[in-house]
Image (tube, rainbow, N blue to C red; front, side, top):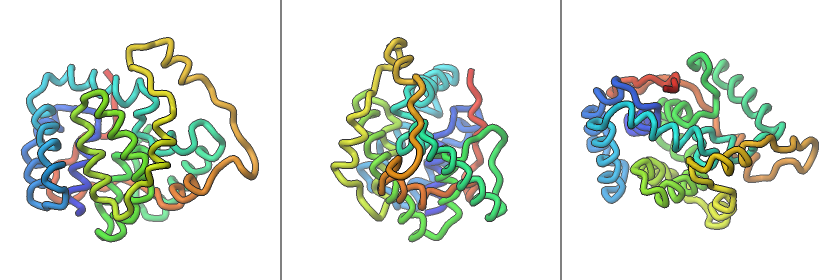
Length: 239
């Protein structure tokens, strides 16, 4: 389990030459552990092949268009459960405190709810604990997978794999609620500007819900490479 999650974490990072060089190792880990169902494993291999053989600048541009420019595909978990509410700030503080208690450190400038960080942390945990933790944001993974499917993106396979590994399967109504949020095209600048406008900050009781509270209680992350997979850069630079 630890090597598989580390491999998925690496695949979700900003493409670098180091990630391309680690492609063969990532491919071997995915096959050796055999934790991911075969029908999901093959699409993962397709993604690995794309990352290994593609032009690095094209891969980086694709990554930015998907995960940075489009809020609905954000790799920051709390974006999907808190948005810009006050709860998100407190959740970040709680995550950072959890890292410190575990003597685990993040890279400078990296936010604690970044999904590759979460997966790296789970790669250090017992398999049953990791699967339980994956179950909490499984509805987020499922919604992201569906949005990536509509874009015909190979990154969809990572999120299908995470849903498959989770011990609790996402509820249809929770997925539907996320999919009702705006999901503009990355090239529609007007729609993107409107989506990124500041949201009102909610205070006091009732500003959250049980789904959010459950995720905050479970999602705890930090950074530590799992053995057997070359560590890719996770400082998330931008071209």
